[in-house]
Image 1 (cartoon, rainbow, N blue to C red):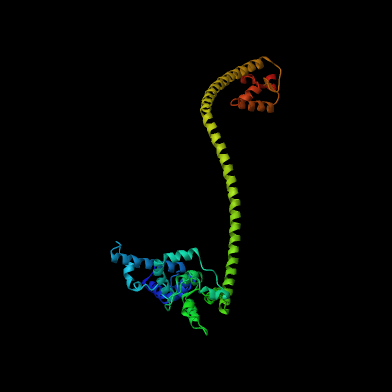
Image 2 (cartoon, helix red, strand yellow):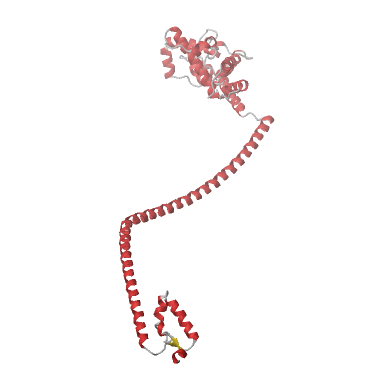
Amino acid sequence: MAEWTDAQIRILIDERRNRNDEFHDLGRDWKSFWNSIAVKINRETGPTFNDYQCKEKFSNLVRDYNAMCNFMSGKGKARSRTGARYFDEFCTHFWERPEDEFDRVCEQLVGQRRTSTHEELFLSLHPPPSYDIATAQESSNLPYLPMVTMTGILTPSFYVYYSKQLNQLSHSIKIDVWRRLTSQKHPLSIEQASSIHPEVEDLLNKAVGNYIKQKECQKMKPITSDCETSLRQENEELCISKQVLEKKIEELLELQEQYKSREVAMTRSLEESDEKVTQLSDSIALFKSIIPDMKKAIASAKKSIEMLENKCRQLEDIISAKDRKIIALTDKIFSYTRYSDINIELEIYFSTKERKLWVERRSESEYNLEVQKKYAFCPTSSIALRGDSIH
């Protein structure tokens, strides 16, 4: 909320003082009055005050003035700085309703009513009837409507009877009605104008009706061309702003839909991830429980492998020994046989080629155990060609 400066407060006080009659003539329609003051303050100083802020600020100034008066009289303990600053402006009570003929009459009536309680009680219990032209002459003979002969003084019954009309009229209109009552072509006497009379009632009712119509016409005042242009421009700007806002709303709705779809996809992926994490956790827990058994199985497998390796070595040694025995037995067998065989070396070769073949086989058998198993060789001392053996 914007703070009030001294210049703004001065404008507020001056406007309220200069337009005091207008303020009280408005009755209770004060919103437009305070709004016009707010417009002037905003135009001259800058900040954007509204009618409610101006009304509340002025009420606070009056309250601060009253607090300062109480402090000066000894009734209050707190001294108001704001009340002291603007004390000179408010000591004239410029904001109060200006006193007119009717107000003075009312003040006198208050004093009279304090001393005429019996008459007021009678009037409240027996209110005067409505009057028309036919009963105009009879009205002056009513015993409970006392007449006053003092110029400018109204009777208590007049104010009580016409209070409804008087409360609806402004200060200036009441003065105009009083002048018309006393300065017509055929004016009423002071006694007639200050008492209950049909013409007084008709004139007051007409004044109230005209005042109400005038206020309605002011509210329904036609719009000027400048206002129409400005309103049209504002309407166009509002339409453009509306279109921009609608586009932005559509974009926001699309983004919201995309966000929702992405949110659904993310939720699904998170659920799947949670399921996978749960499965992995279960698997890890299972593997952790299996690890001790696996270690035991691996240790036993290592022992079994070592035992098998030892057995393999033993079997290889046994096989090697048996192979040597087989070879020895094969050599013995071939030493006792005279028949030739492809795999058995003959004691006598029939050709040099055959001899060279068995020499190569013998040399291979020296480092190849399989060759030794496949062929049976004769002792080298008994090998000879057939021709040599014949000679």
